[in-house]
Image (tube, rainbow, N blue to C red; front, side, top):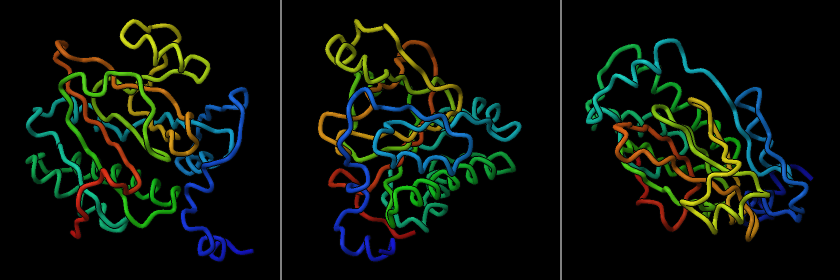
Length: 234
């Protein structure tokens, strides 16, 4: 049976691929070599794919030097082929300075959104490009989504725990500090959420930064849902 036929017969192919029976001992954290390796999230036992990468030369320093008011902050639901226009609109709204580094930032955002849409086989994408100066989602939690892509362009990366420590982190919250993992600078993570299979999904949180003076620039990509904003055509 061809992939196209399978897609027509399954009303929600993404959920079908993510929802497989598996045991906790089978859970895998995959370290990707290339962006294309994000597709490994569809393996039944895989809960998280991490791609540790370097930004183009000079981009991290340029982002770190931006005034917080020049950092993009917004959320849009757009067709997959409108991502460049969506990111451009968010950068324009923040008056992010033009030039080679902004162009490189835009190209990286588009590359990740294209990869997410391709990996998750979606024609629509819920984009959140946030500037965070507070503790945000400081609680340990599972995302109520099939899958979510996260990367931090500026500031500390997302913190997470391996599945065997999930219950301890969820129950102890601020008192939990054992076996805590954290994304390296600019790493990309594709997480399964609890909608991939009830009660599963990687437990994680935003790193607490209140009072540190840090500013994070966070990209979060989701499939469309009831929580998404109204569809925008750009």
